[in-house]
Length: 156
Image (tube, rainbow, N blue to C red; front, side):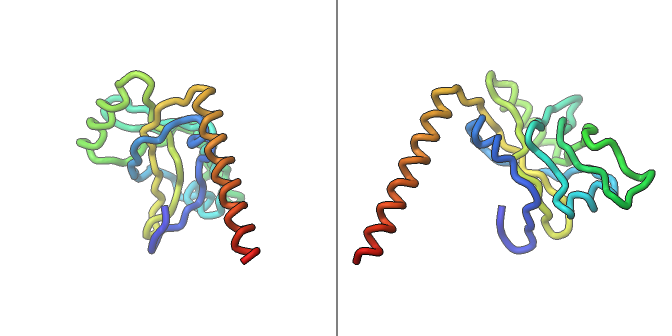
């Protein structure tokens, strides 16, 4: 995510390694004040989190937001379940997509958009080990091509 009024705070690089991200969705997130201050400081971890639809609402599990240092008694549990804010029709569409075999909702990034905390959800399908090896081979090949192109430009 990039653009005017958008400041990315955290990305989930492991999600791109473990899953094929087919579509991306933007959602708001329900937070307390100290959690927002902690996110502004970059103290958020998306590594092992996932989203699930329950009773027509979306919740994110396993998202770690470190306690705010000046928060005192107002700090919440760092790993608590947080509600995501989306339109009802988007949630029902996602429910239909996720109910297919092998699909999940994985948070890919947390960012500020016009002063509000947003979370980007990816509709993800799990990769097998041979898919991970293939994507790493493609990445290495692209690096080699770039390296040779730079070398050719220097020689000219």
